[in-house]
Length: 107
Image 1 (cartoon, rainbow, N blue to C red):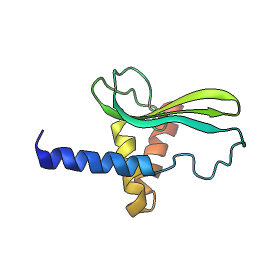
Image 2 (image 1 turned 135 degrees about the horizontal axis):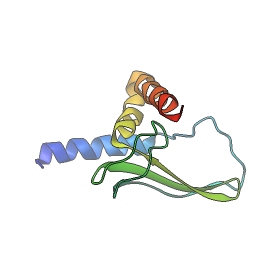
Image 3 (image 1 turned 90 degrees about the horizontal axis):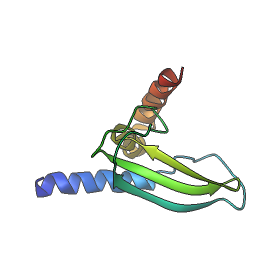
Image 4 (image 1 turned 120 degrees about the horizontal axis):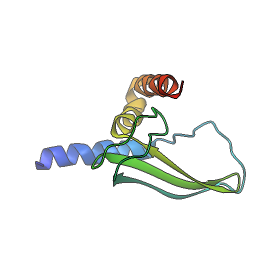
């Protein structure tokens, strides 16, 4: 991977991690995030947003937290991570398109 490609990927991942995917969900006072990072996936798990199966080697966001007293793990595929990163400049349009895919895949 070239230095330029690596820098672009790192920038996109940093932008993705800046987005709070649960913005607007007020939760409870005891909620806390244990881990929120980009990882290289082993694959096989569904994306929380679009419900597509994450492929091995794919860069994904993994968010582990205690919500409502239960430990929860959320994963987002690379395309949904890109949509998260883009939401800052496209007013959430890419994010909404990925959510629509998730609704279709859930039915």
